[in-house]
Length: 252
Image (cartoon, rainbow, N blue to C red; front, side, top):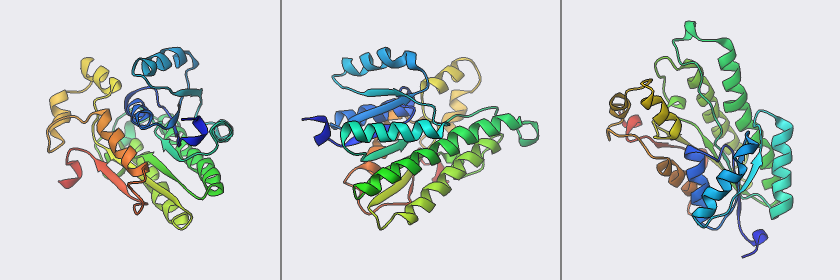
């Protein structure tokens, strides 16, 4: 099947963890998959990893904090593949966890630039293109921290609550124009970053598992499956939803 006859998805931060699992899910379902990274050196390694699975991805260098870069990437993707069907705003960072009075102001500024402005830019320019083709789907990465307050995480909480607000507000804006906008709110997920922190003794794995009624960590694939559902044609009457994928955390 030629590229322009397939659906197309952009996944920011798609080289590791949840982003990578999401890219695999879409590629397995015959999408044109564009993933982004700030590190150009990853291209060969990442493409080879997907090739080993019999899958192809298009890796583009992108800093989601740069509005011009985000706009250009989305326009270039549409020019190459014909249109943009799905935008997954996955890129995010967490810095300097501490009680609020002991946090660094610059940490919050950096998280706002990536976690909020990066999502905003991705939504803004994806919507502009989707309006030209009568619709599409956007899925943002929120967090249990976007639905709750968590100890020593007020800065991160604020950025993920903002993602929830952007998702719900924009969903209403475009509900009658064929654009569905939703988010997922993961619990603690066993990514390489979390595993490295556990191995280093930063976190106690049993303590993290225990916050979930299922008493385990989630897998990146758990989140990827939720993202794919929200983006797919199986979901035509859901917009403005925040899908909790958290082992029961929000049921407490």
